[in-house]
Amino acid sequence: MRPAKNVEKLIRNIDIDTNAKTDKAVLDDVLKAFENSKSKKSAKLEPNIWRTIMKSRITKLATVAAVLLIVAATVTVLDHLAKPAYAIEQTIEAMKNIVTIHFFARDWQNRRLEAWIKVNPQTGENDCHYLNEPELGQISISTPEITYFYHTNENMVRIVEGQALRSDIRFGRYIEDILDRVIEPEHGEIQIIKEHDPNTGEEVVVLWAESPNYEMEAFIDPKTKLPVRINFAKALPGQIIKSVDEIYYNEPLPEGLFDFKIPEDAQVIREQPLLSVIDDPNYGISAEGLTKDEARIKIIKEFWHHVINKDFESAHMLLPVADVEKIKSVIGALSGAIELVSVGEPFEKPNITFGILTPVRVRFSDGKILELYQITHFRRIDGKLSCVLAGEGQKSKRIE
Image (tube, one colour):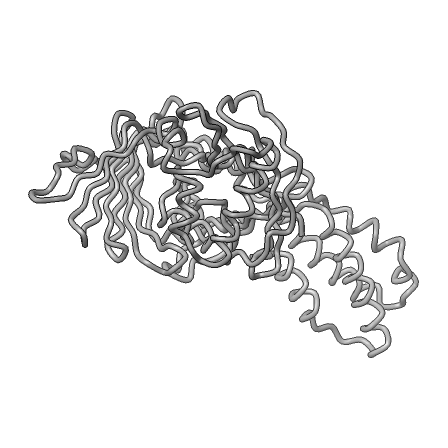
């Protein structure tokens, strides 16, 4: 969503009785000044459009009344965008009082899902998750101690020690984390307007935020200051949600919601925690006879060869920390990989102790190129050197 387009439309549609030559001169100057103003972030927009316009040649026109009407209308709208009664800080504060979130959403394949999240109000962290994806045939329940993935169609339960279902963005601090971690100051843009929600007819605040690889539109209730609907045009890597249709805050948790009982006759698979998985000899490639640099490049190239050819089973064997469905979901959200553009030089990151990072540039079917940072983990098993991919070490960024 781009509120600036609403202002441009308003300017173009103003009807004032002057001669055609004057109309064109006035309109050209106002639009030029407006375009200049759009180069700044809306959150910091100031009504200095007056100064820009008054220095232009329209001050020499005889139709001063017409100019003043147009400029006044423009400044009024821009000032409304720049200084709304609502401020983002109000939502950030309101979200600190959340203890539970219950929402209904759709993924990038338009499948309906339901989620419950128990929030730690002191930290905003997501303590427990419940995720029901009926069309996918999966129910996921995750607590700090244990995670269950129940595949209803196959009557199969995967069990992982610890909280395997998690998000880098805290739901109790959602807007705060998006602004801090995603909307980069030098590349991001934030806009705020008020409009009527087409679903309810009620007035809502619309918070639109964009960075090169992310775009969100949040509809916020002006009374509670909390989001009631969220749409994503561009998503974070690994994000399965495309839109959130309904959100309910601080509802009592259904009894036993996070106490999963394994169904009778279900197949049970116990999966290993991260460090155990990446040291499993069944995953990865041999590095025997190769330098670590050669092995690092080889495994990355093989992984993306499998992904580009949609062989997600083979890709999972190189990246065991993500199952087949997870890899499919991430690649699907990024519009599908079509080319491995480059594999960069490795580097270390202090908080990652089990591998080195490699910047990898990949082109996707919508034309964008992302730089991802893949972790390569080396291990010796029975005296033989091998390596495996162990996830991403930092947020990806858009190159073009």
